[in-house]
Amino acid sequence: MYSYNPNSLKAEEFINHQEILDTLSYAEANKDNLPLIDSIIEKAKQCRGLTHREASVLLACENEEKIQELFDLAENLKKKFYGNRIVIFAPLYLSNYCVNGCTYCPYHLKNKHIARKKLTQQEVADEVIALQDMGHKRLAIEAGEDPVHNPIEYILECIDTIYSIKHKNGAIRRVNVNIAATTVENYRKLKDAGIGTYILFQETYHKESYEALHPTGPKHDYCYHTEAMDRAMEGGIDDVGLGVLFGLEMYRYEFAGLLMHAEHLEAVHGVGPHTISVPRIKHADDIDPSAFDNGIDDEIFAKLCALIRVAVPYTGMIISTRESQSVREKVIRLGVSQISGGSRTSVGGYTEEERPTDTEQFDVSDQRTLDEVVKWLMEMDYIPSFCTACYREGRTGDRFMSLCKSGQIQNCCHPNALMTLKEYLMDYAAPETKQIGEALIQAELHNIPKEKVREICREHLEKIEQGIRDFRF
Image (cartoon, rainbow, N blue to C red):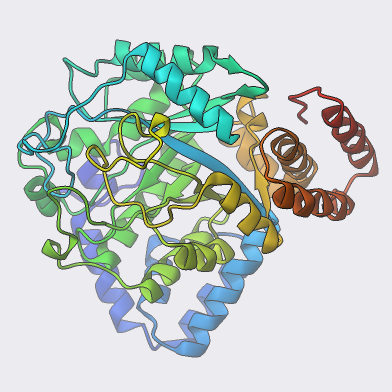
C-alpha cells in the first residue's frame, strides 16, 4: 500500500489514490462549511495559493455567492500577475504515426482509416513559413509516439529546421514541445536544442482508468508517464507544462491530482509547473466524446479554470481552439493567459488552402484566423502578446516565478507585449486590426510602471516603425 508523500519520486506516492479519495470525502463533508470556505478564500486572497484539499473544498461548494466570490478573486489575481496580456501561439503537428492504443485519440494504432503522415524537413519549413506569414512567433510542436517514424533525432531535426527559417520579417523565436514521456538523456537533448516549455498531458491521474484508456503501447506504463516531469527537470528543463484531458475521469478526482502534481514539483524541484492546460475531450476521427461519460459542462469548466488560477496564482494557463469563442472569452477573464490562434490540428495543415480534416487530432471549435483572434482580443482590451523574451533571456523556472511574485513582470512582459504586438501590426495585420492596435498601444504605454522603461519602450516602438525588429526587456 502506497502512502502519500509529495516529496517522493514515485508516482503512486506523490499522486496517491487514497489521498485523493480522502480529499474528495473531506471536500464533500465541508462543501457547506461557510467559515472554512471563507478562510480558504481569504488565504487565496493573500496570493499564497491553495493546497489540493483546500481547492477541492471550493470545487465542491455549490453556494452561488461563494462561487461568484471565487470568480471575482480569480479575475483579480489574473490581472495582478498577468495584467491584460494574452500570449498567442500555434500548434504544429509533425507526425501522426503512433504505436499507442489510446482509446480517446484518433492517432491510436488500430485506427486504419486515418491518413498517416510525417512531415519532411522541407514540409516543416513550408509549414513554418505559412505560420510566419500569419504572424506567429511561438509554436508548440506535437507528434505521436513512434520510435521508428518519430525518434528523438527526428524531433531535434525539426526543431533545428524551425529555428533556421527566416522569412521576410518572420521568425519562430521559441518552440515548446509536446511529445511522449522519454528519458533524462533525451530531455537533455531537447534542452540543448533550445526548447521553451516541455508539455505533457497526464490525460488522467486515476491509475486504473489510465491503464484502461491506454491498453497497449509504451504509454500504458502509468508510472513512467507520470514521473516524466521529474526526468525532464533532471535533464535541465525547468519550464514544464501539466494538463489533464477533462472528460475521461471524474473531474473532481482529476482536479485534485493535477494540483498534487503541481505541489510535488514545487516540493522536489523548488518550482511548480510553468503552465497548466485545460483541454476537454472533443469529437475526432474514430472518437465519439459521448463514449466517455465524465464530460463537464461550460459552468463547471469555468469553475475549474477559476480554481486553478487561485490555487496556483503564478502559473500560466493555456486554452486551445478545442473551445469555442464564447467559452474562451469567459475563461480568459478567469485566469487563462495563453491561447492558440488560427490553429490547424492536422499534419501539414497550414500549407493547405482549405482546412484539412483527414489527419486532425481533434475538431477545432474556434476556426477564426489569427488576425480575427488578435482583433477580438484587442476589442476586449487585452494585449495579444507574441513575446518570447523570458525564455531567451534565461528567465525560466524559479527565476521567472520570482519575477512574477515580485510584480516586476509588469516592467518586462508589458512592454515586451506592446513591442511584439507592434511588430504584428506592422507586418501582418489587416487595416482595421492595425488601427485598433495602434490606439491600444498608445493607451497601454501609460501602464508601464517605471518611467525609464516606458521611455525605452517608446523608442523601440519608433524603431519598429522604421523596420527594425526583435527588441526585448
